[in-house]
Amino acid sequence: MNKKDGEGEDDHPFPELSNKSISSLDELVDDQRIRKKEDDGLKLVETVFDNKTRLILFKMMNKGLFSVLEGAISSGKEANVYFAYTKKESIAIKIFRIDAPSFKKMRPYVEGDFRFKRFKSSRSGFIEVWARKEFKNLKRMAEHGIPVPKPIAVERNILLMEFLGDEDSVLPRLKESPPKNPSSLYKRIMESIKTIYRQCKLVHADLSEYNILYNKKTDEYFIIDVSQAVLNSHPQASIFLVRDLSNINNYFSSFQVKVFEIGKLFKWVTGEKIDENLLIDLL
Image 1 (cartoon, rainbow, N blue to C red):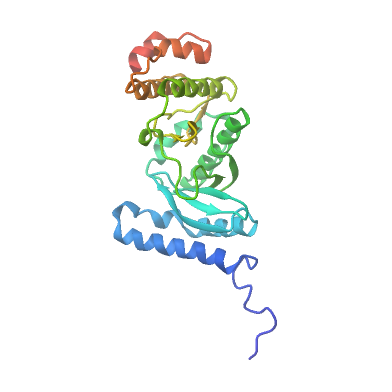
Image 2: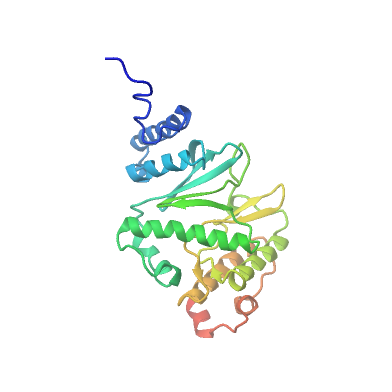
């Protein structure tokens, strides 16, 4: 029997996608499955590309948000980040793991945030909120001039954002790329912490040399991984802020930078005197 015109061409749920787009995603998933068998560190890859995640990726492709999905930029316990192309530029796609092993540890960062009072108690529902939280935090920080990857779109457990790097590689973390002028960079990062607190009304809550990308050529830095960032009114905001300040002080102290005392930094950032008992307990 002869096929009618167009019959069979729309077997795929999104017929507008090019064969190149579809194959780039399918080949990437297949490659990840092969690597999963060869590398114990990628045992959870099946949950990154579960059926719902693949469906949403196809929908995003169909909307023109990106056209080709390439290999992984980074792989972590909470998420994998992938390199992708739009018709005009390179972007990064962060896919949060539905079965993130640190799921229970992540909850306090959301439960104290009025922006997400209502969320599904299921694991998948929580991870969806976690992805939206990073999108909102990135957007708020970008609007106030904080150097972060610009957020593009978010759906379920998938976040699209600006790619930070060049055609060859992503920018390295500050831990892997010692600054050209440590003293200057220290002061600029502290200024960002203050702006995040006072203007964005947020605390990063996990800031360190591991969550800052650094471009040695331009002496630029970018703060990343902000899903856990909390409102500065969060019950544990002060604890998180002291931890962030301590992490940054510890890193730059290794370069003989003259760092400021935590108590003085805390007052400079918040405008309030730190609780000495809190300082003793944490330090």
